[in-house]
View 1 (cartoon, rainbow, N blue to C red):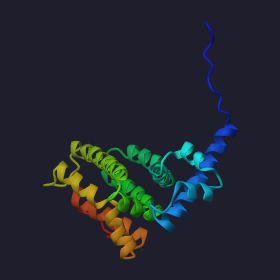
View 2 (view 1 turned 180 degrees about the horizontal axis):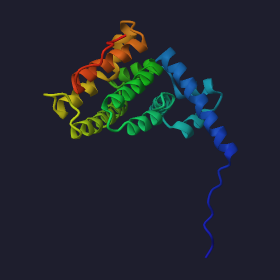
View 3 (view 1 turned 180 degrees about the vertical axis):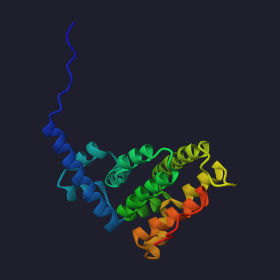
View 4 (view 1 turned 90 degrees about the vertical axis):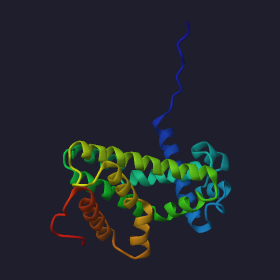
Length: 215
């Protein structure tokens, strides 16, 4: 009986693959913004990254895969893992958990408002991207529902607010559309928006807002 041979992946090769992926994503983001999603071909993305088109397909697959890769990169840049750790560490302190979630959302939206607009617009005409958008919103809804259930079980929700209403309000107000209206359209600073949203949701879901108000 022979031993099974396992493929060897050298650290240098992994680093090279990661570097190639970063170049592809940077090229794609630039072209998505300049030409729109439909106008940015895989060939053009490959050319901008200095690689062949088959390399793009091997690294990220279709243009949907490229867009998903960009959104994942945004989440990593916004420190999603750190946010999840902080929310878990703040168990029993709903106000702190809420602020950590909001801070992450603001970082995420601010880091990729252009890509979010592209994804939202194209999802209206391309079925696979519509599914991707719905999957993302579904994950955000489930994460919100899980956190609110924790608050509800601890008796932390404000008087007269049930869990279902709390989930709907928090999910809606922490979405990308509200950020776009206040920050992109009305020119609010990130800090002002983050403080206002935190104060607003604390008041609606957890009771009176501490003194200080929105900045």
